[in-house]
Structures are given as structure tokens and as C-alpha cells.
Image (cartoon, rainbow, N blue to C red; front, side):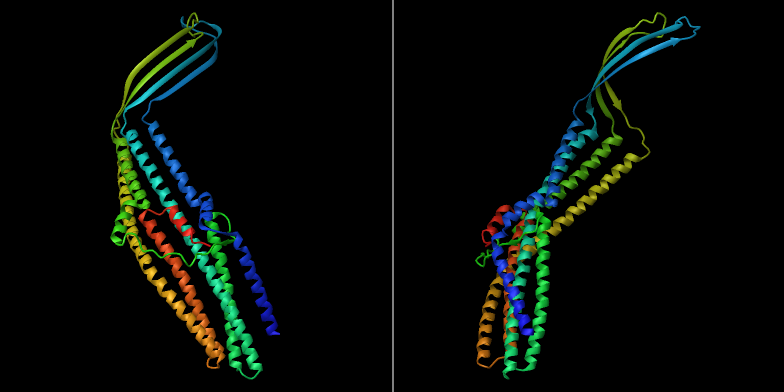
Length: 450
């Protein structure tokens, strides 16, 4: 009965594998996923909106130093009823008349330190947002690659787990047949059954990891991929084009967009300190020109005659701050502290970028050596497995020894696949921290997906 159940289960797994092969036609590649990610990734979209917001801030600040023109108009109907008056200027009686007025005022800042300082500050804000957008564009490339290769690694582990479970299942059937024929032992059967149960549990866990990795991709692209193309074994292992890590570190200091964004943030904080100094301590001088026109159809004075009056004026308006309770001084000190905080954040970012650049460079160089070593390990494990299978057929080795050799081969293949993925990610990470990661790098990798 157990043998029948095991064979039915194997048939189900075989059908599942056939379905996976048929689904390869629906497999997507890196560029297809990147196209979706640029449209649906919320982190990138947020950075894009902030960049557009920075441009609007520049337009707002320009308005503060440009002429301001305002016009007002009033119209009213007046009903006047003087009941009693002891003043000869006011006549008893009721009258109705209409009043209208129009005025236009033009003002231009001649000297306003705060308004003039807002423009370079706004430009720094826009520069910060633009640098953050470049950083997020590069981060998206890396995050997507990390998610995709994480999915590939999980899928490889699942495939190895299925292959190992299938091999253990075959060995279990052989152990049971050998026991029935008197050539095997009950211990071998129990050991095979225990390993088979463990392999089933491992396969279930690997399948869960595949689905979890698929969800990570969906978080970036907005939809679950049916499948992803695999990385070809012909993918070349190339050393960094700059052999000296110090050259990469130097490039990262000047090209990393995160550093550029934080430098802009420190500039914004310094500009805010200048704004607060000008706003609370320095005088302001405006040029003001005005024109007023009024048309009154009546009056409360004797005779009730109306009037039409137009006036024009041009002058300077000086505002001198004297004392505001210490608020302006507190704002200046707060702005200075914000600047110091921004400078410390910039210094920390520079150290992180330098450390990550060195780490990525080491990951690329050591990754090449590790992949080459694991290729040799796989070759050796394949030879060892073939030798154990030959010895088992000759009666010189047990089936459990063959299972151990096959498990070692699966582990070596899994380690090799992971090492190749780690090398690719380290290469992307090195360019990312150096500020030169581009879609072209993704396109180069995509050419080796199949």
C-alpha cells in the first residue's frame, strides 16, 4: 500500500514538473519586469513626484522676488435717512445714492534678504530631489535584480529538493524490494523512509520560499510573475574594469547620488539659516505704486452732492524689525542645528558608501574565485556519485551511501547557483554604490536569461 501511495505521489510531482516546463512560455525576463517596475513601483513614483515638487518650489520662490500686482473693486448702494440734525452740514431727509471704488497696487521688493535667499534654497531643494530620484532609479535596478535572483535561488532549491526527494523515493522502493528478496535490511528501509519524510518536508518549505520570493517581485512590479527566465551557465565572470578598489571608492565619493542628495540637503539647511537671519533681523524695503479711483453718487453733507476722485502714489516702504520676543534668534539657532545634523548625516553616508563600495568590490573579485571553485566541486561530486552508484551495483556500497553522495551533489549545485547569483548582485552593487548603475547593465544580464 505504501509503495502504491509513493508512486501516485511521484506521478503527481511529475505532472507538476511538466506543467512548470509548459509554463516556460509565460516566463518573463529582467527587462520586462523592469518596465513594469518603473510604472508601478511606489518608491520610484514617490521620488519622481518629489522631483516635480522641487521644480514647483523653485517657481514659488521666484514669485517672491518678482513684482506683485493686486486690484480691488467695490460697489454699494447707500440709503440715508437723517431724522434730526442740529448741524447745518447735515440736512434732514432721506436720500439714496451709489458708491463705487477701484484701486490697483504694484509692489516690488527692493531689499528682502529672506525672499532673495529663498530662491537658491529652492534650487538646492530641487537638486536634492533630482539626486534622490537618480538614487531611486539605481536602487530600483538593484532591488529588482535582487528580488529576481532571490526567486531564481528559491526555485533552484525547490528543483533540487524535488530531485532529491525523487531519488530518495526510488531508493526507498529499491530498499523495500531488496528486503523482500532477502538482500536488504530493515534498517536500510527505515533510514530511507526517514530521509524520504524529511525530503518531503524540505520540498514543502522550498515551495513556500518560492512563493515568498514571487511576492517580493510583485511588491516591486505590481503583479505576480508566472515564472522568470533562468540565468544561463554561459554567463561570463568578468573582473571589475578598475582593478584598484581605491579608484572605485574615489568615484563613489563624487558620483554616488545619495551623497549628492545629502550634500544638497546640507546646503538647504545652510540656506534656511540665512533665511531666518534675514527674516527676523534685517530691514525690508519695498517699492509701492498705487492708483485709486472712487465715484460717489451722494453724501451725508448738505446738498448731498456726489464726487469723483482719482489718486496715484509712488513711494518706498521700509520695515525695520526691532524686537519679536527672541523668536527670530531661536529660529536662527534651530536652523544652525538642522545644518549641523545634515552635515553629520552627510559624513555618515560617505562612510557607508565607502564601506559598501569596498564590500561590493571584494564580492566581485572573490565571487569569481568562489564560482570557479564550486564548478570544480560539482565536477568532483558528480564523479563521486557515479563511483558510488557503480560500487552499489557491484555490492560494495549501500543505497544510503549513494543517497549521501547524491545529496552532496545537490548541495554543491545549489551552492554554485547561489554563488553565480551573488556574483551578479555584487557587480550591480559595485556600480550602484559608485553611482554608475544603468539600465544597460540590466540589459547585459538579460541577454543571458533563457
